Image (tube, rainbow, N blue to C red; front, side, top):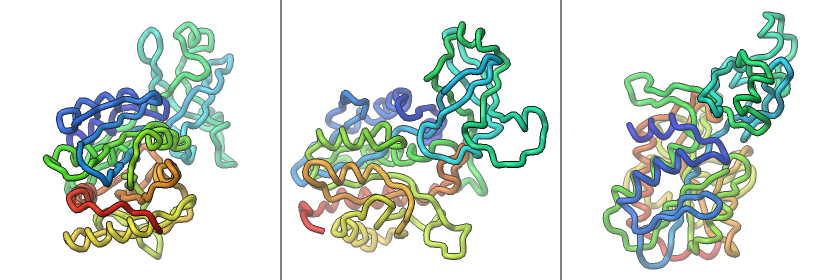
Length: 339
């Protein structure tokens, strides 16, 4: 889990994934036959083999914030990168890279700053970063509209060590899984792409561009899924196995691919959970629409507090997801054409 911890501790919001990409490229290059960074910034790696070709995709980017404007008093107002609840960053410590080194700030509001009663829940427009510098000083440091802001978070383990917590579990878990798969699969029969995409959180753009250049016969997006184990009807929880998405807010995954995944899981006695959701979507949507249509599904890992600075996942789910995908690759299906 040292590699996973390194991945989640590295900053890489949408549009700024290069640091994460460098780690992945360094780790995976010995275990694949080719490595390419395309014009859009996706990292595309391949193990050679025969048809049918499988595309596996995990996104490198994470949610974050960016400078929207700077008040004369130095307060930095923000815009979100990706979708998340603004309240989850209130009070967080952040770091801004300048031309003279790094400076730190605190996310606050006028009410909190002045110790006044909060009558309405604040939104992103109410929040600012207090760095202790004036606007003039910040500009001299090179801080301007569009400057990236990194939210600082710690990572570690909970309980008996079986739970990992930290930022960017979405989707550094998927990136970790693909790296581990490439390492474990010494020989494969069918051509397999291990694809690490950019800008999933803002529109799945990296999935669209990478899928266009990969002539895949079928695909699996490897991502994370929110839990619902604090509700009455629990269908997605930690420690009960990887999750196969049947439907989300934007797509219905390919029925034949889903059945194949379930069959492999049963054969190898790997527990899985099924998801039908009315919220969100993944790289699978854009991949499925590429090249006239690619049969695609989503295999993921359950995460509590997803899209916050402190997500929680179970190490056993991560390991079982690797086992499941390894078994799928070793037992490839024929090209899937129909639903």
